[in-house]
Each structure stands twice: as structure tokens, then as C-alpha cells.
Length: 439
Image (cartoon, rainbow, N blue to C red; front, side, top):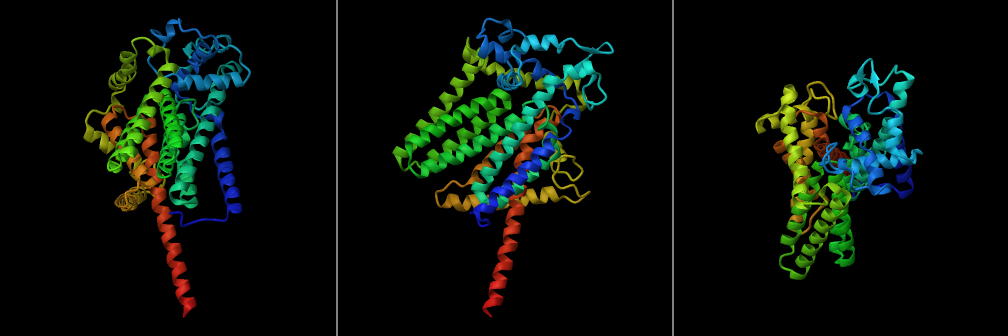
């Protein structure tokens, strides 16, 4: 319920001010941010954009046997678009010209030499090599800001403008989000598609309530396409499809007394699945032959890689699921963590707000379910459960970026608690002043 609202003419300046602030914050000192090895890997593979969209060359061995062919390609495609928009005609030729793969600093490969360091006091030659990385970082920031915008729309639709502003500001200011939302990687892209998945689910619910079959089918098509792009930037994007399975099953169960509705909802899920698989396979030539086995290998190979990574980074290895739970709490909710939203020494503000927000959301969702309605809170709860549950089951390495989707979900819960507390206080003060005035 949107109990907190402002006149429309006041809303736009507030939103624009927020995004002006976030834009300046995320673009500031972008070139001096610490360098991550994965930035090199993603930019290096931007030649895939040319192979696919411009040269239409599907015979190149790199699609099938070289250069990690089983890794999703949408991220390199998106970064490839960026390079072309910057005026680069042939990406592979350009990367060879600047020595992107071969340049060394004092005899060491440049990406290893700069790994984990701030990009300052560099030679002109090194700055030239880093030009595509700068472009990639700008793209990542654009996706971060786009993710914030989608989050604002979602939270506004669920509980009004205040919830939207607090959620967006908290996540935008989060240290982990700020760190990985500015690197030429795919974490900000994934978050954008995650939030888009939630927004499209809300739109599907709206179309279902209106019994608008055409709009339901269209949104289902968009859900499948969005899912394929989300998986195409990171394999963990598969969580979106798991979410949609639970979402549509819930709708079918809720409307089991109406065969016509449940059948059309089932039909829409078929559209989701078909569009997801069709677009994903279309965008990944690796899966064009022996599709089922190659598609599965994308996920199994990544899982095996995560297991193997524990061997060469033993200090970051995670083996037991109880250890994973403890580590998730330590990294995300513990007052001593660098990823929390409220850093007040030993005060557990984050865990308190998370529990309060969780409880309030559950109460709201249950109340709506008793009326045979699925609320936005229900979708957020379902998404949070899937994200946290999957992290517990999958976590094999204590790598910071793995926690970002969970940090985002917890931040939304905390914002919900803050919004509810603030609205409760406003309502109490208003009611008290009205009683005093009546006397």
C-alpha cells in the first residue's frame, strides 16, 4: 500500500537528484579503481561480438574448443557493442594493435602485474592498453544505474516512493555494490536482469488480474528473453528461471479451481521456457550442436571450476554448508563486515533491520495470500529465499562478488523495515495531532 506519497510535480526532481548523485558517485575516479583480472578476461573476449554479429563466422574454433567456449557470451557481446560505439571497427584488430594480449610491464603480463592495484602512475603505453577497460567500466556503471532505476520502479510499485528511494540509496551506497558495479565485469549486468525479472513478474500479475491474455503472453515472452540474457551474462542467472518455476507453480495452484486460468498460466510458462531456451541457444553457437549436452555442460563445468578453484586459493575455500552459512553471516550481516549498510562498530543494526523487514514482509504477504492474492512482498520474499538458499548450497569460494545478489536482497528488506517504521511514526504523529485538534 502506497501510504507515503508526494505530489507528482515533486517526485521527478527528487528522483533526478538521487540519480544525479549516484551517477556522479559511480563515475568518479573510475579510471583509478583497483584492477580485477576478470576485467581483462571479459574485454579480451569482446571479439566474439564481431564473430557473431558482423562476420557471422561460426567456424572459428574459439566457439567450440578454445578460450573457455562454454562460458556465456552476452557479457562480451555487450562490451563489444561499447567498443564499436567508441568508433572501433574491428575489435580483434584493435586489441592486437594496442597489444592487449601481449603487453608486459617489466617482463610480466600487464594484467597480472596490475591485479588488485589502483590504476595510478601508469606509463603512456599502459594507459593505451587500458583504454578498452575504461570503456568497459563506463558500460558497467550504466548497467548499475539502470539496475537502480528498475529497483526504484519495483519498490515504488510495492510500497510507494519512500521505499523506492531508501532501497535505491542504500544499495547504491553499499560498499560491495560500489566496488563491483564499477568494474568491467558482468555483476552489474546480472543485477539489472535480476531486477528486470522481478518487475516483469509484477507486470504479469497485473495482466493476470485484468485477465488480459494478450498482455500475459507478451510479458511471458519478455520474461523468457530477459532470463536468457541474465543467464547469458553469468550462469548464476539461472536463478531467475528457478524463481519463475516457483512463481508460475504458485499461480497455477492458486487458480486450480479455474481450469481456464490455470491452463493459460501454464501456457504462458511454456512461452517463458521456449523463449528462454531459444534465445539462449541462438546467442551461443557452442550449443548449436549436441544442444542438450552442451547446454548442461555450461553449468556443470562452471561448478567443477568452482571446486577446483579451492585448490589454488585454499584460504578462500569453503567446504561445509554450515561453514557457508557462517561465512555468509560474517560477510553480509556481521557488524564487523565491510559489506554492511550500517557501520556502527559492534551494533548489529543490519541484522535487526533485516529481521524486522523480513517479519513485516511475511505478515503482509500472508495477509494477501489469505485473500487469494500474490503481493509484491511475496515476490521479494520468494526471490530472497532462492538467492540466499542457492548461495548456501553453491558457495565454494569466499569471493566477494558471489555475495552481491544476497546483499541486494537483504538491503531491500532493510529498506522495507525503515520505510515501515517511518510511515508508522508519521501515522502516529498525524493521529495524535488530529486527536488534539478535535479536543
